[in-house]
Image (cartoon, rainbow, N blue to C red; front, side, top):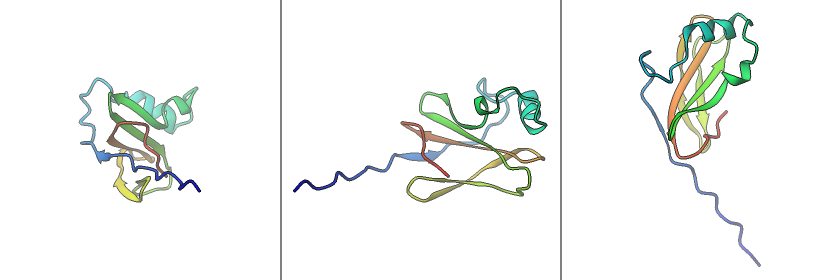
Length: 102
């Protein structure tokens, strides 16, 4: 009888938040367009995006939220940074592959 393969937990570490000067940072006009439902493709902005090799930014629009966390596979909780007062949040993570989160 074969034993089920154990699934290795991906190595995930929280990266420093954006300081607004990185070339891969989101343009404030893009954030505003998403927040005010004026962006033509919000899924090109929201969710996980690899912004540099091994560095991912998870983005969420949570209009009623005061704060937000991304819970990475394995149960690790990462506080998200609020980039817009109307509920646009991000968190950067270092991971070898696309992080699984909720």
